[in-house]
Image (tube, rainbow, N blue to C red; front, side):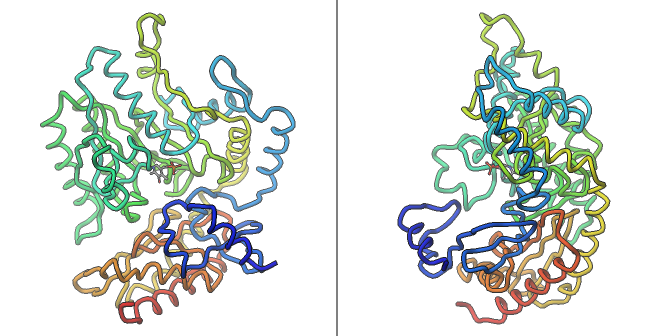
Amino acid sequence: MPNSPLVERDLKVLWHPCTQMYDHLTLPLIPIRRAHGVWLEDFEGRRYLDAISSWWVNLFGHAHPAINEAIRQQLSELEHVLLAGFTHAPAIALSEKLIALAPPGLSRCFFGDNGSSAVEIALKMSLHYWRNIGQAQRTEFVTIAHSYHGETVGALSVSDVGLYKAPYEPLLFKTHVAPSPDGRQNETGMDSARRALAGMKEILVRHSQTLCAVIVEPLVQCAGGMRMHDPAYIKGLRALCDEFGIHLIADEIAVGFGRTGTLFACEQAGIRPDFLLLGKGLTGGYLPLSVCLTTDTVYEAFFADYGAGKAFLHSHSYTGNALACAAALATLDIFAQGDWMASNRTLAAVISETLSTLRDHPHVASIRQTGMIAALDLVADKTTGQAYPPSERRGLAVYRYGLEHEALLRPLGDTLYLMPPYVIQENEIRTVVAVLTAAIDQATAAAAS
Ligand SMILES: *Cc1c(COP(=O)(O)O)cnc(C)c1O
């Protein structure tokens, strides 16, 4: 069966996420028929290596037999029940396991059904905590330049990605923006961390009485351009939050579950945030689920006689969905059955070695990597670091070339990256980097289109 009838029907009725639909007048839309491991297959039998884990959600490949089976089994018992007044075994078991795996001291799980809602939960919980302990003047948040925390209004308010945010400014609450520890300029990781912490401290000093929390993506600011920093920054940030007595929210929705080389990125800094947010890979890339973990201290500030008006009256219809929890439990079982951090180190070394062939490319700058996330930037001029005019859409040319050569590489503007599932084979890494290299050659050789 050809792709085209589905594409025609789709373009009549769907509106796709994060897409200028006008692009699809010329850009192919690809209907996927099935997927297995790292491979997606369309209706014409063409394959695409999912080098970005279907937007960073997939960990162990598509159609994993153990996750499939866990969902099937759960389906035969209970698909869903409300989580207010009722509970179920998968939600309990998942909470127990997450608490056991997370940095010590995180002892409560509040579920949501997507990453953005976990961010909203943490923001509301932090503000409400301060209110409940008699500090209702604390209503403000600090975020880091170039950070991304999701698309809902609160999550967007604490994000700093202009392109996604600008049209909605009138809806958003004001947030303090601290400098990014992004270590791409000619400084060491420690220098970047120190510089960014100094900028953070200035904000904390000035607003010490009105702040609730700092929100951060530990180690890699993903959607904001795969900007990476030293764990020393996160360690220093924890110390600053302690010094000023405010919360630290670690948004590990993208970096959690092994992407950075440890199960959670916070581990590399040896710290415990007050809120740890997980999503994306939580269900192995199967079903929407997110969770906000927090401490006894936060929990106890809400625990009171109903009349005290301190309850956290937040809910989502599908909070703690049983099928999603079963998928998450199966995902954690897969983690427990193998030394994935070790095998990822091997894969990460192959990624690093193969990407190093691009080091001298005249239009490639800032090759960088943290665990299983590797990125580089296309630049017009390597010596000055001058970017291409965004209107030239060089990254889009890379995407297009990838699709024609069996690779799903969906760049962030002119930032190209690999964030593959952990079941990718070494030869598949070499293949995908070869496609990426040819794509870069083509996209940068062409005059502005
Ligand atoms: C993707 C992402 C989110 C939002 O998650 P959704 O499930 O897309 O709502 C929040 N924070 C970070 C760091 C993310 O990468």
